[in-house]
Length: 139
Image 1 (cartoon, rainbow, N blue to C red):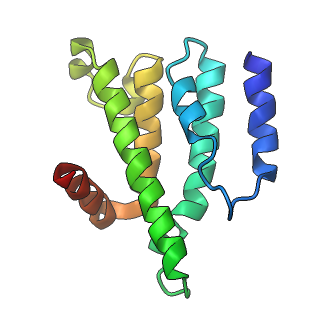
Image 2 (image 1 turned 60 degrees about the horizontal axis):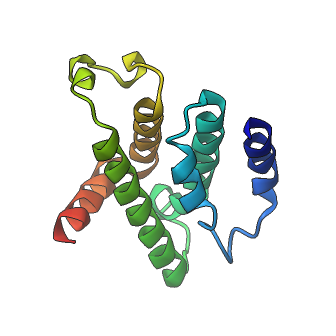
């Protein structure tokens, strides 16, 4: 299974980003809960790779962006953010409270998801992240 996920992570870059930018996200979210760290990290890398095109309109507002592409990206980012936070809630254990930094968390699904959320925060910026949090509260 590990070899399959790693192979898919290589082939994943060949898919049509414009037509289906998030077609593997449900499977990747499932893999983030896997016991094998190599499988979790392959899923994390695929998600983080997709953040580049999904956050381009946020990071480079000076470029002309198609409004429908922006809406699609915003919808995918909100959905991904909500799904990752739901996974964190499901995986939460009181022992995580004593860790101050994500890097010091014990290896596992919780840490992997936290690493992805850190990357989303880096890519989107504080203002956009606040908008995501507010949208989650509204829904």
